[in-house]
Length: 133
Image (cartoon, rainbow, N blue to C red):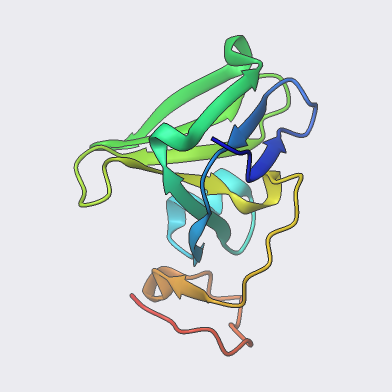
């Protein structure tokens, strides 16, 4: 299958490619995503898990189960948050990819904010993208 996107962690130890189109650009405001990224929210895109290939750095890719069924993966060298999956949800065959880790352009205007009910009180959402709790 043709390569659609490539990405990597901050130090370059983990490199990946995605051989499908990326879907569902979300900006998650839940406390776990905020803590994982050290920011007001975390931005992700999704793809079928079968379309994600780790090209280098499988030995640097670590996993952490942040809640029941949810596994977050990150680089153990630089700490970059890279992927998360939910084995219990309706999208258990999908992987969410940290948008900031992409090395190729993503051209989409369709985005949404999720978990805004638990967003950081010091951050105000000022764009026009849809919001959901």
